[in-house]
Length: 311
Image 1 (cartoon, rainbow, N blue to C red):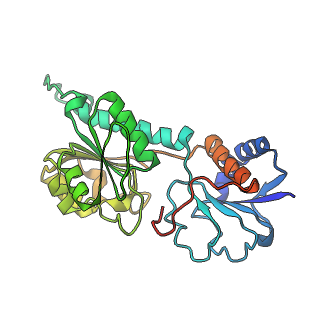
Image 2 (cartoon, rainbow, N blue to C red):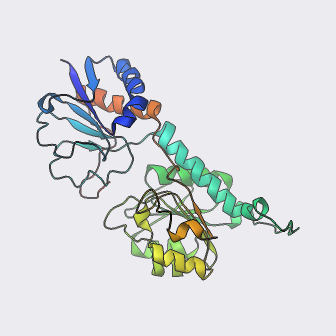
Image 3 (cartoon, one colour):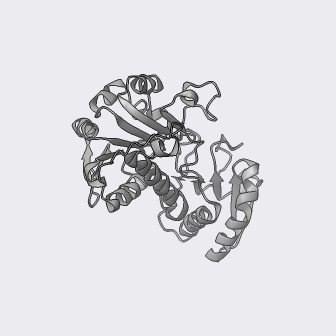
């Protein structure tokens, strides 16, 4: 039987994904057809992005699974017409590695105080010795696939890493905390704070005034997770007061970030244009093809979303 796979993402993405998806699907040995348009009642799988034209899943009566192209599923998880399994993108080759490199690079940048050497218009000779990594505690909020991978990379360099998650986790070499008391403790020693939580109603404004007040004065904030995790007014106030030394922000509530937004002009903010971890078509296509293979073999899908938790 032929498996019908609908690519329901913005058409501009099709040029990037068409060849890699075909290559990955051929490796499964399945008889398949892949394209941008099929009668809904004939579709078995949807390769999906939230900007898709498909918002009503009701006509897709044969649908076996929706395979999200991105790690974040906040744009689809609440869709009440979607009854089929929903899988998020977990791609160790591309997505995860990209996040590890982004987080590690910016942690090292702030840890070493590199900005002062890169931008030194007065040519001042100011030999400030940074601490060793072992003396710079890092806290990661969010211990999912991305958070755990970043934690392992940082502990490998020598940073003492504390990770916080909503539910208990056990990550080798990482101090794992959970719950409200754990959240407060995780912030108290966070000289560098990395936000990698999902975007859910429970995580909105995780970094607010009260949370910032618990952090060491002069801490650094890195947010490659979701824009809604930060109370922007609270962070700007903390930056102005010197409570936070610098914020490196890759994600925002509105993207692209409006040109007049205060983050652009603030001397203690680095804006990066949502580049921390992009889905790479070749490796992401292999993840999608593997889930389709598993579905056709009657095996459990990988990376299924917990609809109640929202991720």
